Length: 212
Image 1 (cartoon, rainbow, N blue to C red):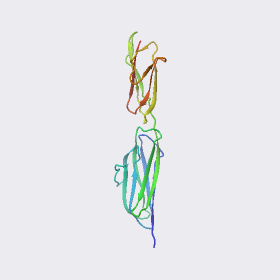
Image 2: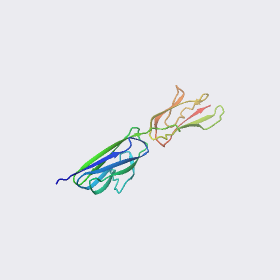
Image 3: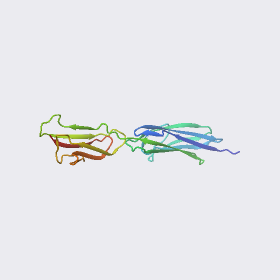
Image 4: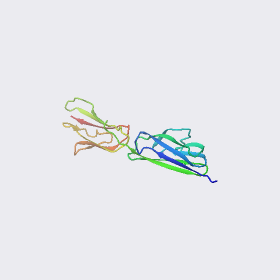
């Protein structure tokens, strides 16, 4: 009498997620055939750019390589079940980052199956909270005014190649050498210019002075 068995595994998860989201993967496994599968083990590697949050147990890990292991023992044909794994997507993260995840099932008879899932991360900077302020609400002719432009990124991606153009106010004269924060003064356009990167959660301050 001949007997045999096979292992099946299916990994499912969201096709898209935002940076900073928690996402849930479901690992479905099934034993087929007419003999037990000896010492069944399932492994799942936490995707790059994510942090492990939780998993159905009992399990071990994640280890130093991010591998979570479920040791299920001998399983009879017909046994099946879901395992849920939750991870948190890193933030900030570049838009379009692909999270790749693979679950593997194997046993002591050398049978093996694997299933993979990819999730595409959506992210964007948000500079809408940026501000411009001046140190005086009223001034007299000849007074010096100090302006501060504060760039604030509250999004979930770094603002690369951000640009600022600020024209010197009418009826004032730029104070030579007063510009700060990496900005420059453009005498042709009578304006302050800046370009650079605005990290998430780390404000960038640009300053300059004018004489009324």
